[in-house]
Image (tube, rainbow, N blue to C red):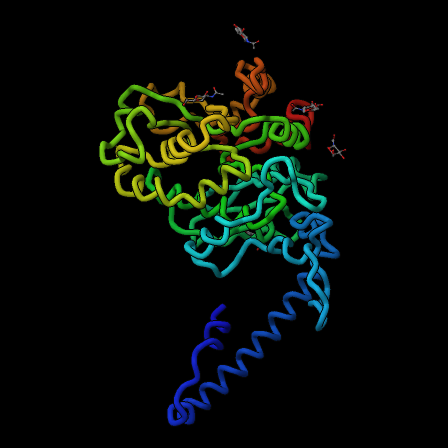
Length: 392
Ligand SMILES: *[C@@H]1O[C@H](CO)[C@@H](O)[C@H](O)[C@H]1NC(C)=O
Ligand SMILES: *[C@@H]1O[C@H](CO)[C@@H](O)[C@H](O)[C@H]1NC(C)=O
Ligand SMILES: *[C@@H]1O[C@H](CO)[C@@H](O)[C@H](O)[C@H]1NC(C)=O
Ligand SMILES: *[C@@H]1O[C@H](CO)[C@@H](O)[C@H](O)[C@H]1NC(C)=O
Ligand SMILES: *[C@@H]1O[C@H](CO)[C@@H](O)[C@H](O)[C@H]1NC(C)=O
């Protein structure tokens, strides 16, 4: 990135040029050195792509990296344009990233894509640092390569150290500080969506946290999104102080009080809605300016914006189960479950203990994920997963 910018600088006047020549030469040789390292790394990446399941998982068969750059005179084929980035790290600023993702390709209407495309579910982990429940997720993903992709946002100082056989290996995206309840939380969500949009195969985008667990096997989860005519964003009109009470009159005319919505943060959106969120420049400034503490942006921004822009695409409910019953009606945080809470009965209860609407039908399958689970819950969860959750 830097090298390209350097190279594009206009030539300095002759005098100047002579004076800086040695430094320029040094920069030039450094450039070649870096280029060499880059080529080496790509070759290494190719080696991994061919020999490692984990890397292959990030690239479906059609989009495997090709070996050679096009020869002089050779036409570039479509597959070279649509190949997803091989790793999640990049050097783009948020501004550059959102711009790029805003024009990410999509299929309009029923025409579909002019190539064979296996749609994928993008799992976007919004975490502080480590993923203590990763072993459970590893089992959930195992055997489903090519139908999912993973993106991890953490505190910027945190460096994940997953090994190359992990599904989380090199899936950390460039991240920034997130403050609870602030617009920076929505920034992180948009950053995750934008990164995931760069892979054309990603069709459904799910936001999860380090304390979330999957409740069903991968195929069931995948089909639940695939079969649904709507996206799972919780959006309700709450007349109380934690709902309409957080509305600020300055939001008008972009958002009027009757349009103000609330819902838990953990959403699932399709590609169309994901693009709508990353390209938004209408509602975002209003929320950034007028939804401040007392108003929790992550409970209102996406919910309100999508309700105005795409009302009929929303199921108005989330697929992530959570228990707010402990701590009273205005509790700031939901219940956390640890080792002692994990029983077969408990898990069966959250898998099928409610009724909801699914494609305009009554259904008892309302939640695909659940939170919040402490690291101590991992062991009993791994034990019960094969019999109760259907994987592992
Ligand atoms: C990764 O980090 C954990 C905890 O910080 C540490 O126990 C482990 O040894 C590290 N693994 C590698 C491969 O560096
Ligand atoms: C899940 O679905 C895929 C693709 O349809 C299929 O190949 C695989 O056998 C299924 N796995 C299970 C465990 O049913
Ligand atoms: C999705 O639809 C297919 C085909 O109609 C059906 O066999 C499958 O059970 C459905 N899966 C879910 C989770 O709704
Ligand atoms: C979701 O709520 C909106 C109003 O905010 C309503 O128009 C829409 O019909 C609701 N969708 C479903 C599936 O209930
Ligand atoms: C769903 O269930 C409710 C009550 O349990 C019932 O009144 C309603 O008719 C059902 N709706 C459908 C579409 O089956």
